[in-house]
Image (cartoon, rainbow, N blue to C red; front, side):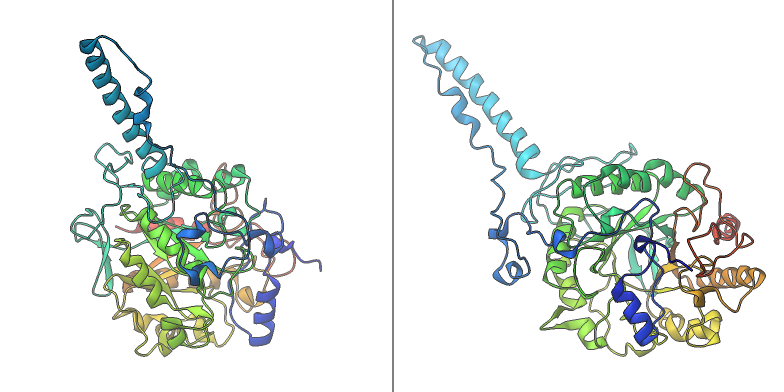
Amino acid sequence: MSQPPQSQGPSPREEHLYHQFDWAHIPPYDHPTLPDPPPLQQFLLPMPGMSQLQPDQQQSFTSNEPDPPSRDKGNRRSAWQWYRSTTPTLKTSIGCGMLLLALVLCLFSQIIIGGGNLPFHFPSPPNGAVIDLTPHSTGKLVANQTPGKSSTPAALSGLPHVMGNQIVDGSGHPLILHGTHIQSQFNTGPWGNAAKITKALNPTIFNEIHSWHMNALRIPVSAYMYMLPNYMNLLDAVVQQANQAGLYVILANFEDAQAGGGNSVLDQQGLAFWKFAAAHYKDNPMLMFDLINEPHYPDWGTWLNGNSNSVGLQPVVNAIRATGAQQIIIAEWNEDGAAGFSTIGANVINDSNIVYSMHTYLAALYHSLERAPQGWDIVFGNFASTHPMYIGEWAFLPNARYPVFCQAITPTQATQLVNTFLDYMQQKGINWTAWSFTPSHLILDTTSFTPTTLTAPWCCGQGPVCPAGMGSIIKSYLSSLP
């Protein structure tokens, strides 16, 4: 039987991991309209402002392209010096007027060009000013006119934060994230077609997600692509639109072949990305940072602290906090099969606003308990009794490329499994975003947004993706919650 195109299936590295180690890897990051990702070297571009980076950061870039020209427009005060009047009174009056005009132009130039403080402007690197996307009473997102000001929890109203093993909102009320995930060109490439971004991520889709009683959206981004032309402009627009639809946005950093590079561990480029992104979005209380998708460190100690070949999560958290960003940071488990957080030991991150995360696709790869509460307890439930937990990707996939994801279970049993998993997470106060608000997964299309059902025919690894999924179950479940 022919296999689906590569954009709908795992990368060669994922194939290797699956067959060699029998890991329960995630399903393909498919998008029906995306072509195969281009060669890796296409994305290995330098960050603008290389001279502003530390030497150890510069080593992670391979291009010899020069820095982009400076964005400064110079001092506009010389604009009035051409005037030479022989009348002292007129000269003084006009000169003062021109000086005032020049000062206004300088201020305007600083805001528009140097400061990067208006919505959707592509800002300078992290040492510059940052965007304030804080929701105000008007319902719109407005620019902060005090660039570079460091934010603290006291200064940032409405900031969700960790309390015990739960998340609370800025007013201290319990907050459980119920949402979904949408993959796009932000992490799969090739970069350059804005129409493909807006087709997958737009206000119509965001409002539909919110109508399902969801309050969160996980968006994959790439540490290797974010400095490409127009990338941040589009991401700013998407974040703003999702926030305006009532959705918290989780930016999930992908460092893998499809995202342009990396070995599923944080590296110097990942560190540079989070320094930039944290400074850029530090005044947005409806944003959270997912440090790296499904990391593959050799052990928990390296996951926490790093080694000569990788950057650990603790140093990245420290770097984010150094920018003044106080948002929730999400730390995904060190992917090691069935063990989950049961083996983390004392390797927890030293920060008061960390939410831990893992992914599950309810596939009985290791033992039958992977589809039962007793197994969920071992992998993440017991840990969730003392630490806030977020299931960033989860699904039952009757259209997975791997047959094991949907084998040995009937549609009726699968429906019960999904409902049991939803109940389990709700009882434990676990946050989640389901895979994914895209055709053939949670919805049939992006016109009618008809939810998928598990009663539709399954393909279960036997061919192209089929329109069967758990969308109707999730929509019904969320509508029943108080």
